[in-house]
Image (tube, rainbow, N blue to C red; front, side, top):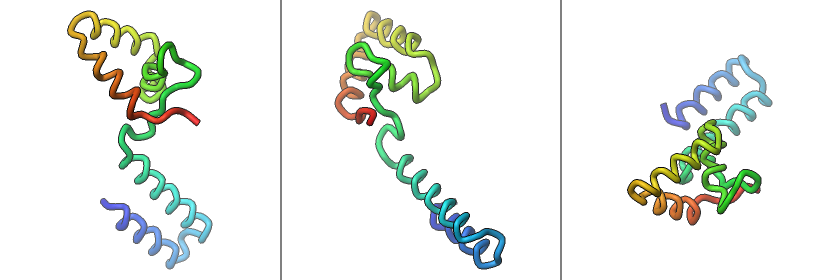
Length: 101
């Protein structure tokens, strides 16, 4: 279901009196914010300013996925030792993922 369809349903509920104007505005804002986050590259991931060793990539990935940061760091280190491919992934994330506010 598209965002426009969901907003149309919300508008119908508002017209029927099932929800108030404040509830409509809140739900509409939530839908539009969700659309914005899901269409940006890397979603809502941000580089960590507090949980970082080099650039905060592993800390940001850990926060986004809910995994402990040491596990993410271990995966990157093992990948670096085995094939070196995680080095490229790390650099790409470091360049393109925005920092925390």
